[in-house]
Amino acid sequence: MSAAVNPVRVVSICDPGPTLTQITSALSSSSQKEFELVEVLDDQEHLGRDLYEAEAEIILIDHQLGGQATLDIIDDLALQFPDTVIVAILPIDSPKNAQQVTLSGARGFLVQPFTQVNLLSTLRRVRVLNARQHRVQTPVTVDDQGRSSPLRTLVIYSPRGGVGCTTVATNLSIAMHEETGSRVLLMEGKLFFGDLDVMLNIRTHSSLADLIAHAGSMDEMLVREVVHEHSSGIYALLAPSDYQIAQGIHPQDMFEIVTGLQRYFDYIVIDTSSNLDENTVTLLDVADRILLVASPELAALHNVSRFMGISQSLAYSPEKVLLLLNRADRPGGVKLRDIETVTHRGIFAQIPDDPVNALHSLNRGIPMILKNPRSPASRSYKKLAKLMTTFSQDQLTPQPVQGAVEGSK
Image (cartoon, rainbow, N blue to C red; front, side, top):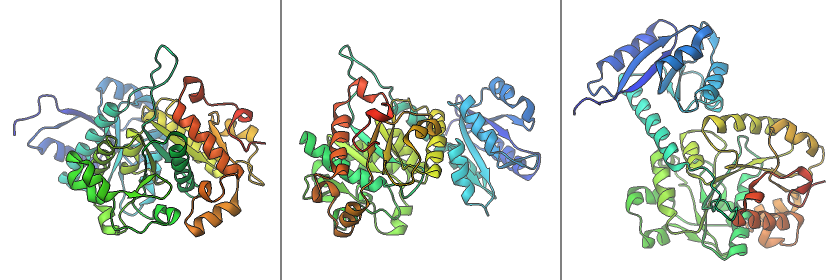
């Protein structure tokens, strides 16, 4: 293969030593010359200026610099250089660091010790992910009548588990179908430990893994065979129950599956994992809107606030990320007037706390909106569905707390 005409410019931020030697050797010995190591930095004082002058496209940064953790540096760089891909180099004995560096703004990570093949494949992967992000992300546009671009794909996400994302995704999907009569697909983006089969009382051997081999040439007959038509009228696509199969699903697979399914459904609602890995980021990238779910707990709100910063480094427009407060009137919860201060974002909508009905629905496999359609939470899901499927520009603007969906106090 001929050498790349314009190799990708890579800057390494790490102390002199074995890691730097590995990086230099791998990039200089690559026969395809896809990447060029243009700068090696270890001076934190002038880091921003040096990176700007180097015109870096990818930043490789070690987990420590001068004996100090680089999480804060990653966070600063992600905000200063939103178009530059950051790849963190992590020690093999600290798996939690992967989540931390991703939350700080890194696009990928490389675990020590690594080989030349590991390094080059990671750089290729993040380059493709970054290019795809810019390709699928289109800013919210408004036509002459003041209406914004319509919703097609909605991701339900929270950086903290246990806040009710699956409950929200399930009930909102059904409410959207009831509101519009459209074909709505509820997709399980949690590849491990998803609960949609329990929420909907589904028994099926089909999963999104069955679509991978045909993602580029998906037809309606195949889709009908794989998705499950629920009694509520929505369609469901589950993640594989086999852990090893789930491990084999990659970001490119997720991207091709979602974009392929968009041809057959009016709305796709995706229930994602709280783990901000490459598959989750791919789903966030491909979404038209992200419904960011929080509960009125300080820890959950703190994580939401951190994700707001990450969304800027991922180049998501403010209109793409909509804050949903779940269990809004929970006893002992953070006061509504303080939530916007903590999250630095207006609340788009609220769902009131309804623990008894929620538990009964889960144990019986009957979504709350079907089992208790007149409950305050169910009525709020219906109002939220109308908001999500109407999409005027005014409705997309985060509302004051007192103007949110039923259930506020």
